[in-house]
Image (cartoon, rainbow, N blue to C red; front, side):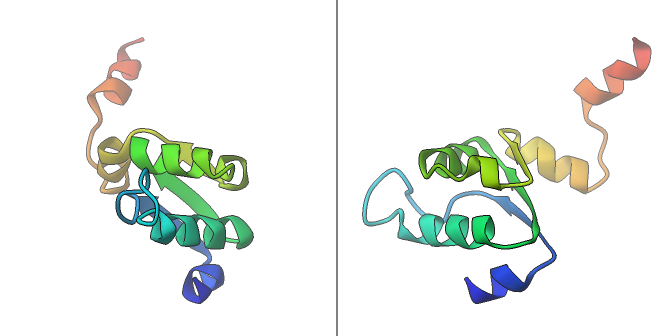
Length: 90
């Protein structure tokens, strides 16, 4: 958690364990709270991760939350996203 607080930006894709089941949600909670308390630019990717920060009431404290986990990673890799590419035809 201390290292996360010191980061300038963090991309988080995927919860830390079975966040729906206590006590296995602790890792996800600790990471989410550390990011919410930091000054870092925080990008949350993936439906499960987005759901976990929403359940914790922390989604509004993140810079960006996307349910597109795989698509978010592909975008960061510089790969073409068909849905975005189709917008060029509009």
